[in-house]
Length: 139
Image: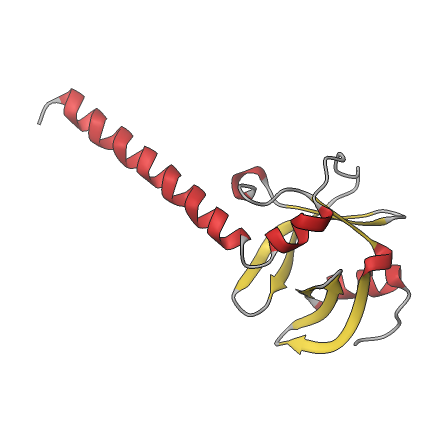
């Protein structure tokens, strides 16, 4: 095999991998993030203080394990993903007034309602949200 053909094969594999990765991210976003984006997508810059590597879940299938970034502001919750995961996942800003606690649990996740979408948060993050929306104790 000649060097140009090996380079062509490698470049073709890289391009294919990137296309598949983008497709997977886009499809994954359809499991919950895109529903929130319909109402809460934002162009605002990220808050200065972001909590990185946080976990959230949309049901039992779509879990962003240690991939989400949270920004807690006086007005609401800013959510984003790192650039490499952001295809189909625009940053979100969810006002505190639209977030409510529920009595539900999905395994290790405490469930909140962001607008009309159920979102599961792990204990440490659920405590931060409960504090901001004025709910005390574990749900």
